[in-house]
Length: 418
Image (cartoon, rainbow, N blue to C red):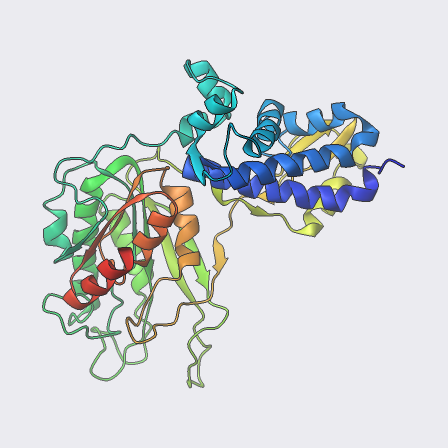
């Protein structure tokens, strides 16, 4: 007995979510992994069987209305690749292949024209990897030990795609290194130094690049007041963001890093601090940002609101206030179970294990690099620490440059990256 579409709606929705996640990863990396092709192709075939009662036409309509995140033509290619990946043409022993080589070896399509290249995806122009050229004087895939400002001044202009960094927090730790930032007598002096460093970093950033800055905060205590009366919150994050904006950066977003397990505090006259800020800044108004690579699952109640919106006097409208797309599929409207990335990110903080007191969590950096740096692009961290941002960039098939003042941390970072 064939399975009806309503009985499998939840399963099909989960399968589509899985497909979109895998597809986004392929787009972000700019490379096709054999195992991903198998999973996407087999899952598409499973969805096709589940809605067979409604006919293949509905499956085609789902794809053509962006239910999977790619076209029907691309869906057929994934299913073909899944078949070929089990045979001799795409050997399972090959862990990954460039997209163009995979398709050509499978005989599915030959990329001899810009038209066919763009047929790979509606977003083809955004996912074409940056040519693998090392700009003269640019220490790609290296940890450079030295003062951030001094090193940045030696790098060529318009050469990196994305800056990801977390500078030393004000009055948080003495790293015991001459020239360190964070122990200035006043907050204004601290902010001025950071603005100068990021101004130099802006020169190095490409015109279509983005800068992501994570910075924490603290309180004025005896001997470490920063020029404020005791018990005052320094307000460093927004002081820095507004100062960078005044210096010429375009401030695009303030992201709240919510910590579900924050550092315990014994204070009894204010709430325990459980968040930090990440600021997204750009050099120009037109910059690279891959929204598809970081889309998140929509909440279940969103679908109920979506369905309800088709009844009553508003029925037939093709755009809802919350931005979800509405799609008519063979007389049936289909909900897209994904939404744009939000500005509150819940990520547990990393534990230092004695190496560094403020290590970036990898899960915090992943969406930054996926959204802010194209495949094979260059990620720069002028305050690399233990090079967690560089490590994530390397894993996501981006090139990287880390700058770190402490010789101790440089040694640890180089060991990690090797």
